[in-house]
Image 1 (cartoon, helix red, strand yellow):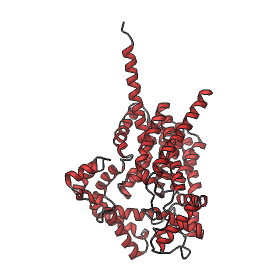
Image 2 (spheres, rainbow, N blue to C red):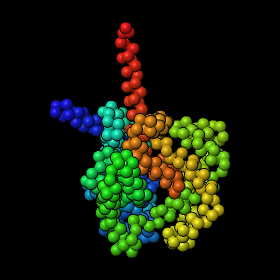
Image 3 (cartoon, rainbow, N blue to C red):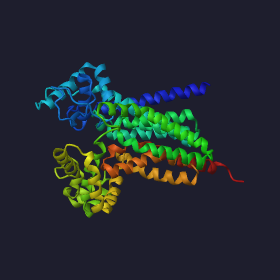
Image 4 (cartoon, helix red, strand yellow):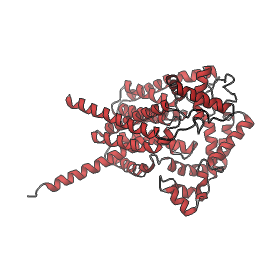
Length: 470
């Protein structure tokens, strides 16, 4: 009993240490204007909730919401905007900064007089990230039944997050999606290891909440059902009735979470759906990458290696060789895709009615190019963690091989959803690692296991060498 209390206390200290490291890494970043990057997507919705009680489409409305009430919208999920609203209620200075920034943007005046302040969100981000790190460590410990792996996975996950501290200093969703996914993946591991209806219900609730944070996670619902079936039938040899009941329990819990939002959309917007225009806009932007040249295709593989790839390729081939991969350059794939999207919106108003025809035309003309281009986009998107990725990715590959050889299928099931999302983002989004931070979980867990096994084997050899011969 005393050992368990001590271990719990040590883990609390570890959690506080992780939080202290992450919140410091975020707070020391230069202050960001709240109008920078994609922050206005979520801040505008929070402003509309605060001042009009309307969940809008934010910047995608053709309405100046500082002057009039915007119409209801459903482009974004509701979780993150409501977190911003909660932060504005808790901190008047942040609320004033949000109002000033949005009023300046909508009225097209200089925002230099606004306060570049978002500390409550920064603290919230650090807390979410810490929760995600602990979930990764707990999942690793559960999968590999090793206390050492818990500590190693937690440390590696923390180190992998630090390079993205500047990203987390923006008021955007990455920290929340990373955290919710990591917790949902832990719940999935626990439910697959010891299947129970109560555990499967929790998995459904968490993955449903994840969909309300970023709609792209909708694709994981059938994936999780597939994992439940695969685990029950293939690994546990459970009865089909049991497997079916667990699958239905997951689906029910998932629907309980997303159902009210879908009903709200039907009532307020007139559409029985989770979102609108979201997937269409992303896919139209993704089609721009299909213009990638053969040279860019080949150079993408070394170019995307963190830390070393970009400077080496720029030195050897010149900065213009991969300029279209850098989102802020005028001729980048990102700007070309967004420009095409904006022109379609200007001409037709909405994208959803057009998307089937656009997909049909793209696949008819360039389906093979589309599939090939997805390879370097997935390659580039998987190098999460900055410099740490150079070690984590190969060690994850080793862990997958070891998992097959040593009968650790639970690790492969744990990694599967994040790998599916990597493929999805390559197919419908772009190559930026910010969308694939959830890979840090399986990468850190797998690397921790490999390192722990290497250390354990070396220790055994050392002890064996110290035993005197006959």
